[in-house]
Length: 312
Image 1: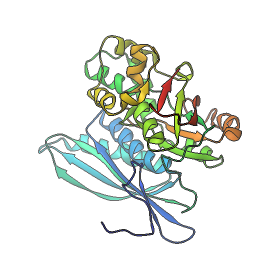
Image 2: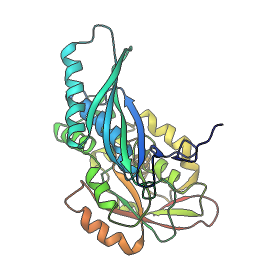
Image 3: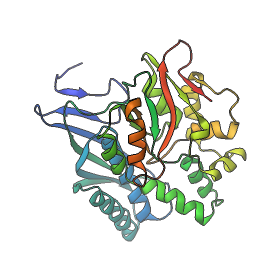
Image 4: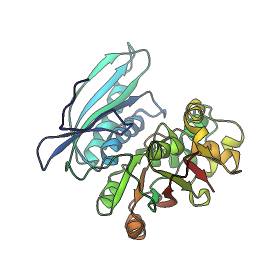
């Protein structure tokens, strides 16, 4: 396979975006993401999809600059709905300080929307989803459980208050979290999306010399998501995530509903960072009031063999 020394991050690891060095001071961060509606309101769907795509650049420590729409719509799809989806994406891109520069639309059986995003980062100062070191503190910036809530919403079982909470979480940019993390010593970072907290944490520690201890009492898990999980109302992606990495997770008797929430696929979830211990308290203090839910959820320790994630 062709290689290029300026391709600093490609698809050899499960990173959030690629990084390509332009010169000694500048590298491009590029990503693409799109999906079918996760909410009924088209404007909100546009916002959620855009925030989700932009998040990959923030997870690399980058700043989004240009965005291109990616859209699939069924034949005869109402024009006003299309406009609202695009308006939601435009407003979220604008909030990020980036510019929408065009895009491409195709006919599809189911509506889909997202963005291709290009951002900037210093070629020596970007984050990868691996690189965590023993002693690092794991910090998460949003609650978890939105995948379960979207499933409940599709079943018509979600209250209006829970729906507002879910939408607020999914439309919140990870810009503020990124802006804080770049002021701290961060050894690894990713955003918690389709693989759920456990899947993305596993990507952070697999094939390395470290493992992770997660203190479940410190996690901000949406209470309604635990109620629905107890009822068995779970997204299909949760089962795929369990198939992917549950063998690497020592659950230690943690409540079944909570464990399900840990594997719950998120849309536009928070950033998960491995922060140097000497910077952890400063980082958490700086995150207060700037992100939805700054949480110190665990620590990184030397790998002892066997499983990679331990719940407490």
